Image 1 (cartoon, rainbow, N blue to C red):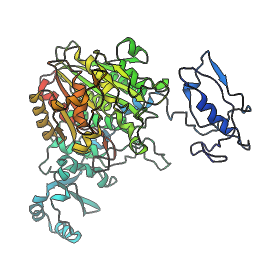
Image 2: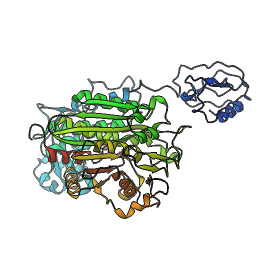
Image 3: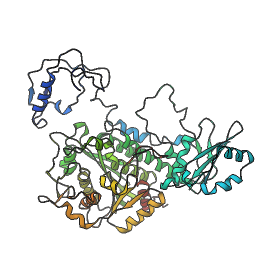
Image 4: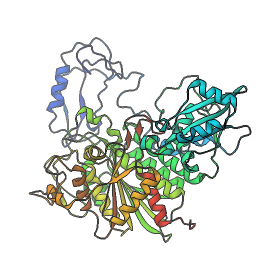
Length: 585
């Protein structure tokens, strides 16, 4: 709202005089005097227009035995406008999660098996341009010279449309390492660069890339997140494709490319969806839809049941949220009893992070819908594992919470007890991700898995160390870490190992608990966070911790600004090479 007569930006209503008579729980209003004072201040306004109240306080609206009335304010009915209020979600609870799963394959329509008269795409390295030029006919050479096309190694992804007949005779694409990000993204420029009404296209060469890289690069170039954009009458439907179609590159592993692209689309969609629609219940719905797709079993422990089932830190972090966003532990099982090795994937699913009582500044809170990126990434990785039928018994655990602020929020200085009995003094409520992960990691280790992998948007320190595009890796097994580094290089999926330096353990010391949830020094925060998590890994269990951004901060070909999977392809390659598939491949 605002002062007298100031319009509310969302509803167009005006904040005037109101009645406040609601049943309240004493434990949810400690004390109610602040709300009373606020409303008393409003009571001086003159009533000159009908209004819709845009302030949502659902925890005040639940029935309880104790009630109070301000007694000072004159009755005035609450008038709803036809427009949506701040309290009303854009879609039904869980719908966004289901949509994210149902739409993962929306790129598939841009690939065809074959097409007569397909326009060729000559994909070449910049170093091969001269030899390519000399092999062209006179008309092509004249056109290339006329437009001054002279590519260098820095021109990865650059295209040239070469006219011929009544349209385009061919397309030239320069393939390179895309500024260090890999040759795959050279092909990501094609979907938006190719005129869609001319015809279908076919790669006649790959410029040193593999068929899988070319196909995946093209698929990722088809990605956009426009669910919240208004569609006018001129919008494109299924019969009017938005992008050009291409023939599947010869030799591409279609199943692998499809699973990888689908998993990436899933992670991006989950992370990019606003927290209004991607709360813990929606993340649960996404897991359930994914489980139904693959025949996996999904179960959830929610609300106070977390205390009964001994997930106390998950409960503590999420208990301040509105009941519809109650904290929960989402579990998915697939392949159980198949004889495969046990693999556990654990994801941080903080669907929005205010920082808690140690509240974040506005600039740091703007992208906090992405704080469930770890939960999204393990669901994407699980999709790849199940789609390709890896020979594993898979268990996925996602801690889905909102780190909110209310009278029931956990506080700085509190001492929380984790699932394994270790106690943590809360040095900062904004270091909540490691608290929820701790419970889930203990649960994951209880079944003696061969490997535990956790993914989390855990620390800003990790971004200070490696930037936003390289995922930080911590591992307690050098062989596993080395193999993951190789997989990362092979996939152009950039990760970098940081040390579990034992000398920093003392930074987590607490005078009143087993440890503090933050380090005592302003340095090495990614390492101390990993050392904290390691306390919840059982001895002898191989463990990988991925600390990543989950967000592209700027748009580039194949990587638009918004949610992103980081390290997922490398992790999948590690799992596939280690455990193989049920078919023996």
